[in-house]
Image 1 (cartoon, rainbow, N blue to C red):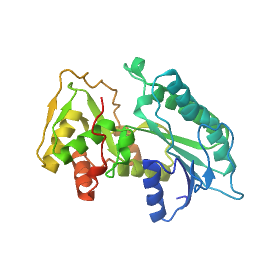
Image 2: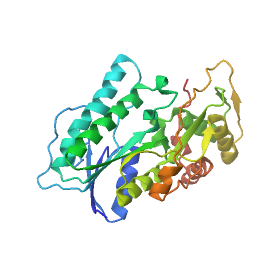
Image 3: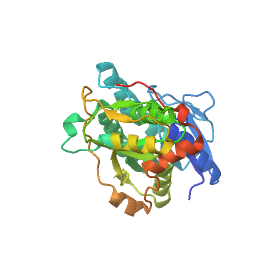
Image 4: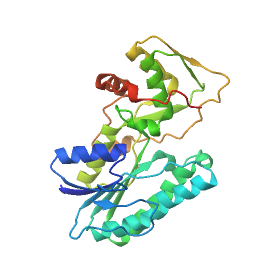
Length: 293
């Protein structure tokens, strides 16, 4: 197993937890991101190769950085530059530091299906990022793996920046307040960040390549998550359906059992367990916002 790794997006929820895990397992870990404290200072929007410290080498790159802009023209351009075009620079960076394997935090939003017409700008730009990385890295004999994650969450509320409804459910259940929610039977798929880290490390250890869906075997509605949260916090209050709100939209959730057989790792943390972890950590007050549409 390689003992040196570079994490791109080191300040992200996934990047922070991955850094902690690799440190504990004896890796020399370098960071790459927008902070002045990072070993390589780089913003994915900058389409120029960043300064690389003399002599820096890392066999493995974990690419955990992305932007999540909307489908407006400005958002589409931001996603395209950050999630897609930056892949050319990442290839140059990987080559310069002697990388042998790049593991990418992809998204199930990039998966083709009969729902492809509803693919967001984010999902489309991440898909193009995969295409560029796979093509350019192969030219330099660098292995490429994309783990297409569903919605990632943690027990400390860092995830709330992107998981607004999960954050809101936890906040209302903890506060014991009534929450009015959109209806519909559309399911979502959540993976705890600790399971995501184990999957990335399994891909590294087995040198598994390709684009792999990594959804949790438990798909769940927001209504069911709310039921679990109110039961676990037991602070009064309840959730109720709001017919005036637009129902949650359907999303495509790919099957992932073959991925787990390949990596010999199955997700361990159910949503019910994750909510209990939030309660145990005493961090529910960090969840929110209290109002989203």
